[in-house]
Image 1 (cartoon, rainbow, N blue to C red):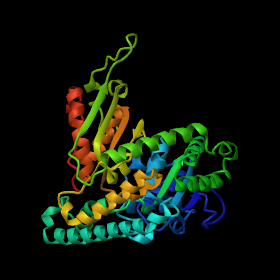
Image 2 (cartoon, rainbow, N blue to C red; image 1 turned 45 degrees about the vertical axis):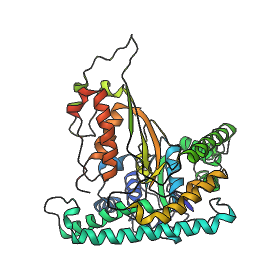
Image 3 (spheres, rainbow, N blue to C red; image 1 turned 45 degrees about the horizontal axis):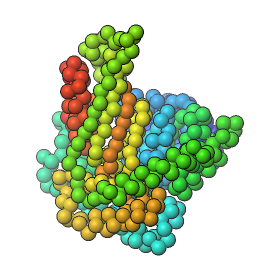
Image 4 (cartoon, rainbow, N blue to C red; image 1 turned 90 degrees about the vertical axis):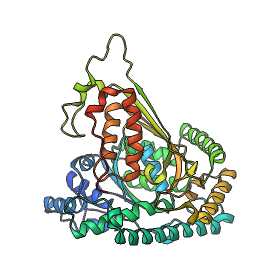
Length: 448
């Protein structure tokens, strides 16, 4: 694991990186999430004397919308190379005020060399070899399914949804994404990824305190490295970033609840889809909501448009019983409101193109390893999970934020499984708020 701060001065070395403009900082972090090079390597290609040209080159490559970049232009930036996917998920859950990016599964190394050692993440010594073997088998399944699906899509191009008049390079990329996005459910949650976050020093101090209070050694190691980097820039606040009793107690209770629920629900059989949505429009009698829902929504040109009070004042909680970790990693990054998952394996999702029976032995071995870690009360059980593990996930926020997320995650280029989950939530949302139906743009996630 390596932690790097971006707001430092002299020329590029791994420890001392160049001073960058806010927009250049944002574009560098965007490029970082689409690369496995590491931050220092990307910065060597940046011309700090001509930031506009560097920004244009980067944004041309990553093809991000303006909104996903704009949020990254302020605060203190920290890049964490080589953290597990679990730790990246946890940091996004904790850092509710942060803007950030994580490396896509399409761009990181997929083999056992890209795993932390068992000792680093607290795998009991007598289970280390067993854990290593299961993870190796998971990567082998990933590569086998990727190759099979890539060949299948080559032979049957109609399987891949393509934009009209797609150029050959686009066809190739989308075909590979078709295979990658379906094979990814075998990727271990312990796989190393890269993470870049921007937030205020105040929020960084809270984040580090929370990490330092968790029982996982990887989280505490990350807290120490982040603190060491940020204390150069915000020494006063970072003095208050060590583990604290209330954080430790809540972490203990949450782990105990997850261990209990995990043992009760542990399964390798896929769960049927269930969704739960609660829309609360109640307002105080002295300040009733008078705006029609149509007036709150109809003036937008797209999902970035401003919504009115009728949706901004409406509370929405939405939850799924079966969010695979592959999808949870991204939906957990929608930073408004509160997100919660007990992070247990209540089932195992594979897309229709992959048969559970073809991987029965792997899923059995993974399940039994997870069961043993849960039985021992080990917080390291999270590292035995694969991205196909299905867990409950709840998000509470306001209706305008829910509508934005639903339009984004069903819109052009959205992953097929996001679209299924958000479409289901939208149907229930429309049942409770029917006046919104005509003004919310539910997409078809094309092309992939």
